[in-house]
Image 1 (tube, rainbow over the protein chains, first blue to last red):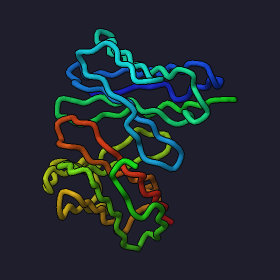
Image 2 (cartoon, rainbow over the protein chains, first blue to last red):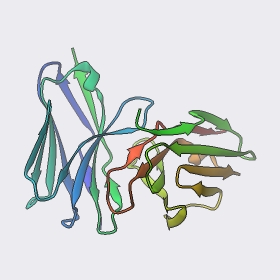
Image 3 (cartoon, helix red, strand yellow):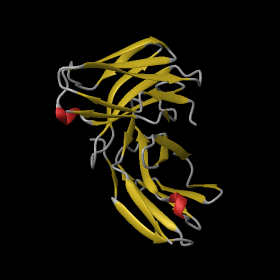
Image 4 (cartoon, each protein chain N blue to C red):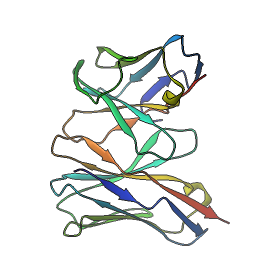
Amino acid sequence: GEDVEQSLFLSVREGDSSVINCTYTDSSSTYLYWYKQEPGAGLQLLTYIFSNMDMKQDQRLTVLLNKKDKHLSLRIADTQTGDSAIYFCAETNQGGKLIFGQGTELSVKP
Amino acid sequence: ETGVTQTPRHLVMGMTNKKSLKCEQHLGHNAMYWYKQSAKKPLELMFVYSLEERVENNSVPSRFSPECPNSSHLFLHLHTLQPEDSALYLCASSQSTGGNEQYFGPGTRLTVT
């Protein structure tokens, strides 16, 4: 079946790098997404990667895709307190539906 | 600001009330979605509309009734809800239903008493 797994919590110190990991099951996914949800807000699209890419960099964000292992990661360089939020990984299934993970709560300590 | 707005942002209703949630998108998208977000659970897709036509209903109880009068507006009509329906209800839109990125509204925090 379709499933997206993420660890629930990650705690880092300000200035360190954060790496949030995700595994998915649908090998036919064309796009994989990272969304950010701040307290009291909806989901904000952070970045996405097309399935024929291994890496995508966007300022402080680096997305790595290992299609063989169905593993996706989001690296945030120089993590700031404003990066504290819940981060959701999502894949697209064959029907074009987004399947979300449970979200990883990132806590950044000063 | 994602271009998707939702009202109200907070709603408290009794189990016998009838209320509606509203979503509006200003992005020119053709697909709109309702999701339910409960604590400690993944997002649950409730309904999908494409060009004002419902294309997906994920076994949602009939006490939730969606309406899409045009491609910019989406409603979720609520009646005789249960306390377990308390959650954050998120609306999203995308260019089409073919796996494009979705843009989310801020959500309506619903509490059923």
